[in-house]
Image (cartoon, rainbow over all chains, first blue to last red; front, side):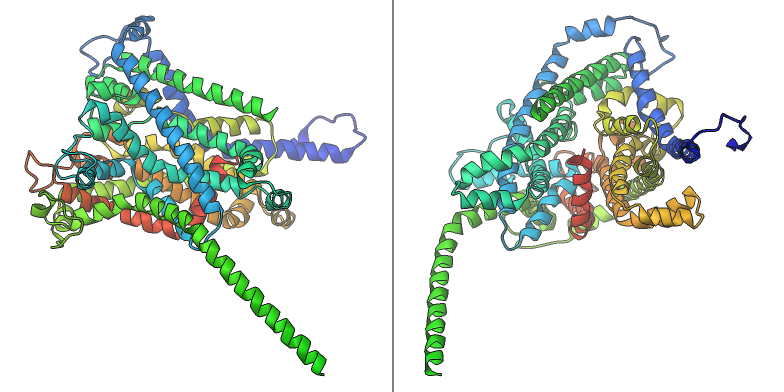
Length: 311
Length: 305
């Protein structure tokens, strides 16, 4: 196709010219192959994101036709600042995130170290660890909800038999234990997954480092802090980012446990309720933007931390 | 000769002593390892107990299920719960819907994603790393942030309460991930085969179909499985974009399950647990068979990032 190009001054390196033409052709081909994927991403993610921002400045209601859609400027955001239910949901979500990520990280690290130390049946262990991850969150939440049952649940029965409690506890409906009961489900489901990611990072660390440390008589404890931790840092940070972002948008477990009970709404539950149940699309969009910014803030914090680490 | 015998005997005696010492040491090591194995047992117990409990509840007849003291083993096992769940039209619909959605999403994501991954993994061009970053940022995109916009778009397109709405919206979390993971697999392949094919006069698309796809077939299985599991497990969109029971997917059905004979006052836990077992068993089996592949895919997606 480029044959009919006007004659250009002859280059000293004809080879290079050929390769640039090939490159141009390759570039065109590459974009051609990327078109379907980029089109899908544009339609499914980028356009809706733009639309969300637009909607957040309107009073759009789901039952359109009853009320014309008007531009309301910053009204939604102004209202959002005084919305105590939303504020509570942010606090609850962050509490949930901090608790679960901390537990999952510490327990996951212990499990990863155990599995990494090598023993018979390690393969079985690794397979078993994948199982909770593969199960739909909604289903594990249902399994736990039944175990938490205040009369016929196994948790109450077990604790009663061990004389740890003297009467059945309504773990889910009682406000003082509600958050802990949800956290336990998430920790149960996700700790093995965290352990697997950390384990993958550990297995890349060269073993001769530990051998050298053993020769020098360095204790296992010091080996962990001086060799494992620093070399594992990239894997740790990536794992923490993924887990934090996941926890911040938590929806399934809370929905199964509490529905849209006002005192136990996460950001996602509040938003979904506003948009789908109430039908207030405009205000819901403002809530969405706020969630997006909060999650973005965590990403920024982590990436700056990562950059500091790399130095 | 006798000297040789002597040294032989001495060596054997030494070896015996060493073996005894080793045995004693390994005995001591065993004692030392008891806390370790105890820890292992605790991990196993916590990881598997909820499944055991779902199993025992699924096989325990209704009257024992709602009675105290709690039975830890079904003394009078029954298949009633399984029978009533499997004969429920709602659950059958949900299984069918989930299968259609998850298969369609997986195939679409693999078809579109592998093409994009080929371009990103094997070609050098301007905008390549920008596109990669776009895909990576999409993998951590919070789905809730565009719920309202998708909700209104889907309604305008007339897709509300249809499986199409789910297939369409599930692309957001399957496609970028598929592209990202497949790109890392494509990039790891050696150049020789590809170059040989080009020299033989194959076009880039032929190279893609005939050379690259067969080479990354294991990766396709891995990413396909991950996409399938993600689509099968999705709840937020499935809950928001469907309205009637005949369009529900499994997670939504399991949450809103009231059962056939379930009274209004009591949740039919036996049937719910039976449904749970039916739905998770294929996933567990698949995971156990393909665990190595899944791990490779997950770590390629997360750690190499």
